[in-house]
Image (cartoon, rainbow, N blue to C red):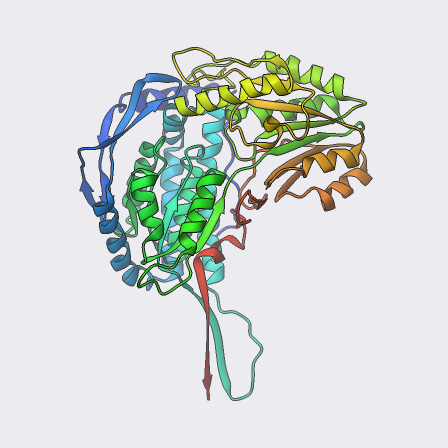
Amino acid sequence: MLEAFRPEPFTNFQDEQNRAAFHAALKKVEEELGKDYPLIIGGERITTEQKIVSVNPSKKAEVVGRVSKADQALAEKAIQTAARTFEEWKRVPAEARARYLFKVAALLRRRKHEFSAWLVKEAGKSWVEADADTAEAIDFLEYYGRDMIRLAQPQELTRLPGEDNEAFYIPLGVGIVIPPWNFPLAIMCGMTVSSIVTGNTVVLKPASATPVIAYKFMELLEEAGLPAGVVNYLPGSGAEVGDYLVEHPQTRFITFTGSRDVGLRINELAAKRSDKQKWIKRVVAEMGGKNAVIVDKEADLEAAAQGIVVSAFGFSGQKCSAGSRAIVLEEVYDRVLELVVEKTKQLKVGDVSNPDVFTGPVIDEAAQNKILEYIEIGKQEGRLLVGGEKGSDEGFFVQPTIFADVDPNARIAQEEIFGPVVAFIKAKDFDHALEIANNTEYGLTGSVYSRNRFNLEKAREEFYVGNLYFNRKSTGAIVGVHPFGGFNMSGTNAKTGDQDYLLNFLLKKAVSEVL
């Protein structure tokens, strides 16, 4: 009998043995940098002339790997392979499919530091952020495996004399998995294994900034014995390959995590019926946020300031849950601002191979330029107190940046920047703070620091986000503990790490027989 799900513990890097083990993992990964990686379709390795070159954002001259790039002909091959494989995979019992996930979890757990080291090198994650990413991937494997076993059990139905009735779940078909670069192991893994444990087959189009990590995950799936063609690895551009996969008549569903604009485009393309398409395609989308941390006048100001700093500048603000707005009541505004500035100035920015670095690079030059453009906008919309410029040219660094006295309707208070930039906004009272917090098109996460129970309960009802945290940071959802997903332009509210999530990839069928 399976043990109850328990989240994977994080690594204590204060322990010298753990630090030594991680240094060894980094050294191992460094010896493997710069290799070429093929596509994988139906187990076949396919090399193409065109490559996606992945670089280390902390050290942009360092090539992490060169990955073959698919065209539409290969996308078609991947779809057809997934469709053929589906006819066999859908007949594999749920318990057997779940066991593949448990095996992959065991393999990943044994190589935890190695995969985290790849995250340091390819995604620019600090040791702590990388370790949390790998732990979350393990959690998704363990959680979704257990949940599929639960869903496969006989369902209670009201019985009628003279009839035998049953209801059960069946898979959808071929799915397209389009994961983000910011959680290139955890979210990529969760999107992929939730699709296959429910009996579907997938074409995995990894993020172009982080394709090597996805390839390493494919190797784990193969080592676990997953049949060829259940997951097909297809790096390629969104314009050439992504749209083709989404629009294909044999595509049954698309699961996507990324920007609002790309998510909306996918939703629009998927809604249009193509020739020979027999179903309405499902879209499962998580599309970002403009998350607020509210600080009440009755709050632990030290804890609030620390929460703002971690929410805003952890992983350089490159989380859909990042706290990019600090909404502070006027009675404590100056003090909270002072504390946040003080703590931000103490942050070390640099190459995340160094365990003492808190704020690493942003993912690439395009992201860096976009963030710097928003900083220039911010200089017109607020009072710059910290940062506001690039870091070392060795990587794609942006200094943690704080703007004070920002209008709630300013662009830097409304638009997702996806970088280490936080806008401070002054509120007259708690109701005003909630009004400001809800005044965006997003609704993903939010955080409230307060000792006032009445205000907390008001926020519980009126703060319109999918994940609301009291007296803690706005980031760091844990599988099985914090069902994750938001409202409005933050996505379809498909709660990951939750008992509802696998239903996105299943159909329910009822069968009745007269006896």
